[in-house]
Length: 398
Image 1: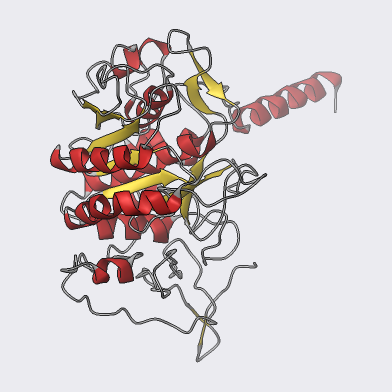
Image 2 (image 1 turned 180 degrees about the horizontal axis):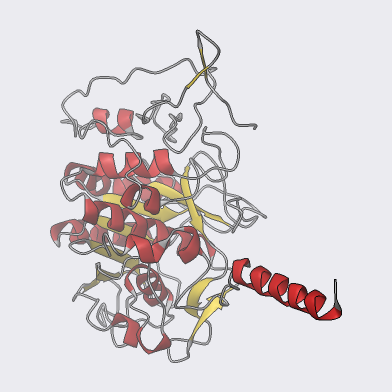
């Protein structure tokens, strides 16, 4: 080959390589955090942005003057002693949670996962420390229900579990009867005391853990039987230098941020399927969640990391019986009168049976005081025809 032809061949080879090489991904920003690619957010927004759903944020208040939250925040209520108003946020926590859910990204602010939702701010804390928090949670939950919220986000914890249980019993029963989903963070003590806290450990509340980019529990995420789902907890948008500063990416957003993203995921699914009940929305969230090992729940990420895109884009997940709760079934049935009029028990395989593969696999649900292990209604079990006869069920390696 002549030098000229060799040079031409080299040029063509390099050109072909550049043409087929993947485009370098832009750096993560508060307007496009890493999980937007994982969850195919822009594609989800072609189907729904969460419109028609109100998410109550029970927290430190929400500042609606931030560019990304203008027009996104309802009037709300303030149950703190000072009663300065739900639009007052002295520490920014509630505002960040609201922005993770419904922020529009305007003004280089936080881009939320479900920008079509409306935020109902309910202020129960001021400066991060509040006495009698359990009674304020109960009042706040009741107000959220009366105000038409379908999803309630509580990115807070309290170690006084029994006190919270006594205070919250009626409010949680009311939420179940009014078809409202409640998500609460499991806490950030996983690497230290790992104590059980409220409200995430209470019956009727879906406990949320924090996961990393690999879908694994982040060490600080408190674990236990109260964890039902997980969501991204690190490198999530926030305001690192106060609400007056620019949006940033928090290295450790905590289970608070994970809870907000779980609430936003529920809002997206419910917006696309407004005729579904809370039981159906939660069921598809559980049986489409992503797990790195098998399809059984564990105490670290529950049933896995939320994947609303699998429901919204791919149509995965079997909503099942609208009146049959996928978890907290015994608790709901024990309410007088029961929330659901004696749902027919789902057919359950033996606890030792191998779990089916895929995002719609059946999984064993636990509840702190449930007394039994009801099974989530899974989707269609994938099977392969082997040889001439017989079916073999593939099991992912634990």
